[in-house]
Amino acid sequence: MFDSRFQTFDETADPSLGAPRLKMLRARLAATGLDGLLVPRADAHQNEYVAPCEERLAWLTGFTGSAGFAIVLTDKAALFADGRYAIQAREQVDAKAFAIVALGEVSPSDWLAGNAKKGARVGYDPWLHTAGQIARFEAAAKKAGTSLVAVDENPIDLLWTDRPAPPLGRVALHPKKYAGEAAETKLRRVAKALSADALLVSDPHALAWAFNLRGADVAHTPIALGYALIPRRGKPRLFLDPEKFSAPTALALAKLAVVAPPSALPQVLKTLGAKKQKILFDAATAPERLTRLFTEAGGEAETGTDPIALMKARKNATELAGARAAHLRDGVAMARFLCWFDATAPKGRLTEISAAQALETFRRDGGALRDISFPTISAAGPHAALPHYRVTERSNARIGKGVYLVDSGAQYLDGTTDVTRTLAVGRARKEARRANTLVLKGHIAIASAVFPQGTSGAQIDSFARRPLWEAGLDFDHGTGHGVGSYLSVHEGPQRISKLGAVALEPGMILSNEPGYYREGAFGIRIENLVAVEPRAIPGAERDMLGFETLTLAPIDLRLIEPKLLTEEEKAWLNAYHGKVRAALSPHLEASERAWLKQATGRI
Image (cartoon, rainbow, N blue to C red; front, top):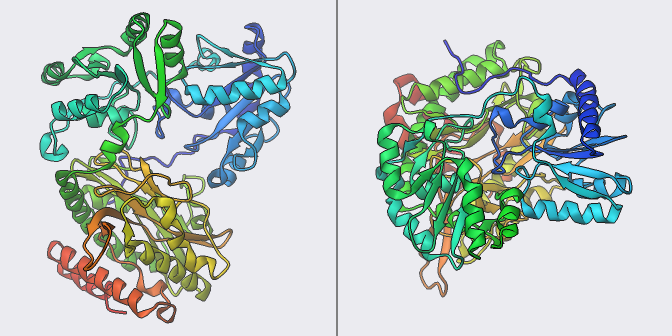
């Protein structure tokens, strides 16, 4: 009845392969005069989701998390993973071959400085690191008396005999009815924002936005891997593999830019460098290989922020309308899933995988789903205490009485969604209901916040934490991340976190997702997407902003302790549930409408 077409639950990690592969790598390094290698979990664009051929860290260590790093030396090796993946790293990696190091405690560069031997030559692939990253490692290497050496060919690629081919996903134009602005207009805006002679676009998300195109090179995010050069004056150049285009798409893109394969970019940069041009390289995504090649040819590299990032973050009216339509469509699928879950879960036959498959199927049944926006986090009981838990055939647990957390999202042509609901199966324990209510209070504090223009995400992050702090509790992730428009579910530069320094502006879409996690017991998270909007306040002396909540899905009333809510918080929840009920009911069957009426009852 239910299945999954956009995610798998296979366990690909095999810790037993780590030691022999590490031995092979050390032999290869020794044969080329190297004493070590930096191994990031990265591609040439610093993408969150990478193509299978870029999973070098997983091939070497077995670790499949979306963020990680390894350093291999002649006598020791280390895998670095942050707190989200601490348990996963211990399960997937041979700790005898690789020391597992917490990223929050020791950085890879500091570890290198403290462990590399004097005189050692440590290799790195210059396509997989930014110039800023290499500068930090060079400082660490200098401290240790070692040197960094850029390699022409990645040593892991030479050992990885069954490495998948690079992706050739089809590129499609993203129509103006979804984008809201013609690519020609966007490109002129970008050019006008430059002080340098040109911008090298190295972030595929920025590339997709600027040229109104979408691709299929990586899972869950519709991007095409490539580059662009946007000059202050003149016609842009677009570097994409021509095998990805249909003839009509190629013709349309040729009107916007000179199109060439990515292999042509290095020579173009050398030529511009020889002409002493100044090019802006994105500090977050541009490979060190391209920056160095350009400067060695005589060019001036300005390393900074790609101006497209902020332009892309400010959604226009068409994109916001698309986001609302996408969330209505997604809300209908969520309501159907939640109704089904409530009827099915108490029977005790559901598993984490079968629930994830059901949710994806309900979304596909809507007829507009292009992909899920990330692998569904379907977590029962203690698994819910792992914020980035990924269910596999090996870890798959039966959903029993207690707490079940499902964090999921969808990609539609008109918008990207991301929603988390924590659900009670049977009667939840009092401590879980109390924690859920404290998290809800923080969620409501963000949703109802009013703040002056110029306020950053860092300035309001504590709103979500205060109810937990007052109980001596907290959570170790940000309160919210930016979200794209049929692009990445994790978009910058906007975010609500202690590190969110960028001012929130009208049109930005973010998540609102405080949580609480008790290791070995349960986890709580309540997540809606919100859009920043102007807020008119009578008598206000400053321009004020607030949030429009986009997500439409019931919040489980069975996990709420009403006595812990203020009257204002109850009013917010009742108003939100009224909005959900009014929006979704016309699209549901009679039995589903009856369930929704009960699920959104007044508190």
